[in-house]
Image 1 (tube, helix red, strand yellow):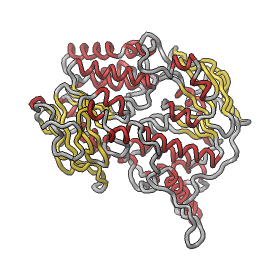
Image 2 (cartoon, rainbow, N blue to C red):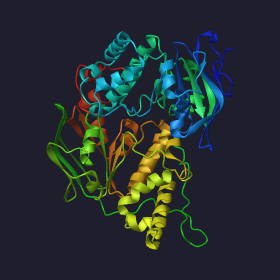
Image 3 (cartoon, rainbow, N blue to C red):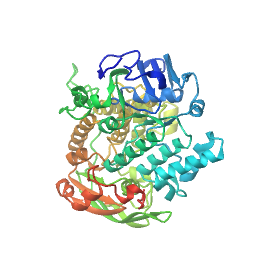
Image 4 (cartoon, helix red, strand yellow):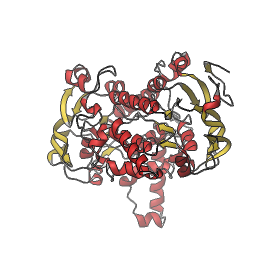
Length: 563
């Protein structure tokens, strides 16, 4: 049976060719979390030997659940397979654990990279090669990884936690290749990467495929995925909504409307707070967050920081005016996350200073800086996956509560009243960020996009004066990013807080920011309005160049970017 685009949910996908070369078969798969949350409902797909298949869909569609089910990691998140089967190379996998699935030749690269930060690059790679018994095969695999990603060979003795986000993604893929997989399962490989590095990553995936490895790419970056893959499946609400050859799907009006930016109006949040008065004349929704004191000026002056001889920041200076959105942008490895870590006390600079209003922040610990109303989100999510959304948001109220551990543990009446007030406040924040109907759900069961909302909501629960957002819309499609932009614009205007924004999505940045600072190789190369920065020749060369441009030296492994 041959079909271009199928809009029904077939038990098997339309087979474009003879299926005698079938490698992976997912047949009528049903998955739930906690025995209650239905995540997949009758999903079927096939992957041929030596092919590239992509799985697309918005956040919450079931993509990550499908990856977990195939790779055997579903039980770690409290999920279970309720029906259907998963077959790999003629063997049933749905009853096997993750380790045996890797040994069978199916290897996953999880979203968020998840490398071993305290180990060196080489130690990360060698740890993954333990499934390969022959020494000659391990050496060949290591040579393949270094040939594919020369940066990793240059940084072999460097701690993985000091790599840039792009280099960590290379390491995550390289680590998977050390197991010599027949099928490589990539979960959101372009997450949080600049356009040029996404292009470089696409080239690497093609090279891996050309060497005989089948690839499944689960992606939010629809344009990249359709360009890479031969065949695509589109999930919606846990079902296959569309499937077909990528060349034909790429021209589909339905794909353009849903995923390639044809939609012009961002969708409403999942739950919209009802602020109309009820019969008692009170508002039904708690306020999003309390108005704090007016923000002061954030002044960063001459920051310098080195790691293991690598200059991560060099004489970096900028000023964030009170009540503005100030973007900090640059290529992967430019020093953005390092700068954010200095601002929030994670790193102590060797030179320079950070002042917020009249307070000197340089040298303070993160919890001390948080007391002054400086709150951040994280590029790699820092949530408690086994706790509910509400409990994760309650962590944001911790520094604002007065009841101590003893009073709370003994359930003193004053502590109980405070807990009820704080939970009402948290519910108001949840409604504001579109999580009102997910308060009782474990965070580990949520889609990546909803977990990003939890991260933002927890930051808002602290009643921030200065909000530092590290990649707030990474892993979201264009329509979802537009919705977050509207939300942030409204919150910033209502509360008058200052925002420092680190993000690779340029339309998102340029639509929100009032001022932009650009870093490259740890140095400031531009500073000004969005319009001035967009037209700056150094910025266009370093960051805003198209994917048609030749790769920069840093992307080819000839230069060395700081983390």
